Length: 125
Image (cartoon, rainbow, N blue to C red; front, side):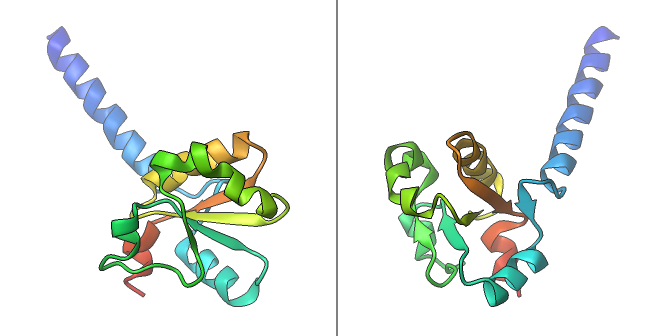
């Protein structure tokens, strides 16, 4: 009975985490907010944290975005220093890596937000 309860509890935690990861927060933008900013705000910086292969792959990329894979972001953060006073919008394939990158960048003093749905959502529109 206890094993059954633990399995149910674990399942509920996973479902809750999945729902939370898709919800808007102060550190994120919806796809429509992102697309509006791309049209209207020339001062934003788009950082794509996918691998170079993904960046040039079938989902494409956001024009004029900077590609620094999450795996090396901590080694290449100095490349973003000139954008410290700007809003950095971070995107990846689905938003998991971009959320992690935003957490890292915010702790380093950057104004960063991740895009809900990532390039998988961006490429649909």
